[in-house]
Length: 232
Image 1 (cartoon, rainbow, N blue to C red):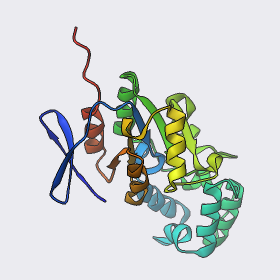
Image 2: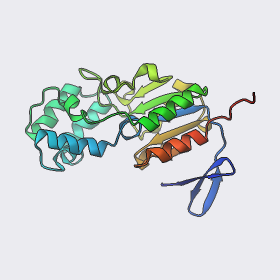
Image 3: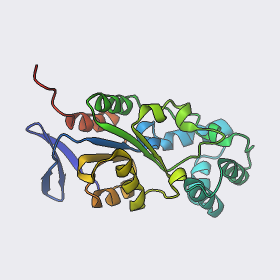
Image 4: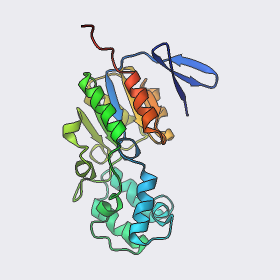
């Protein structure tokens, strides 16, 4: 469910359906999605890939989200039941393009989102534990997280669906993220670009932010929840 986030008297409030709920600050854990949050928008990356490969506009998206073989292999990849090379072969076959190193080519135009990355760095510098929670693209033979410079040394915890055997929006993967951080739900904020991934986190008491197309606004929300600096 979408929310309107507003600053009021130095506190962040989430307003929905005429109801205003104050969010306690500061938080102690920040959980961030990868594709479309820590990076630029997945849809823009997909369009650039289609142009680079000479594909019909929308063909790549349809292969991932509409073609039954594409949907099945992506779901299997996310939970470690298919390899990245399986994905390359199936998606390449659907699109009738060379499957060699296809995941790398498919994500070539995905880049770190500077404002969200900087907000995460500020949070971590303030003593907040920062985790990445991602439905995996696979990490072998091509590791997109490492390639984009957003890997284990950037976080206090990395939770990948491929390694966990479960993917968002299963409640279990959010529980594992909390366990990895050693924090409770109400101590954490979770940011994702897919609204359907938020309710299971909210059910665990996690405060959620639906990131859409405005990294400036999302970064401002996260900064507003930083603990106040200690007085000199």
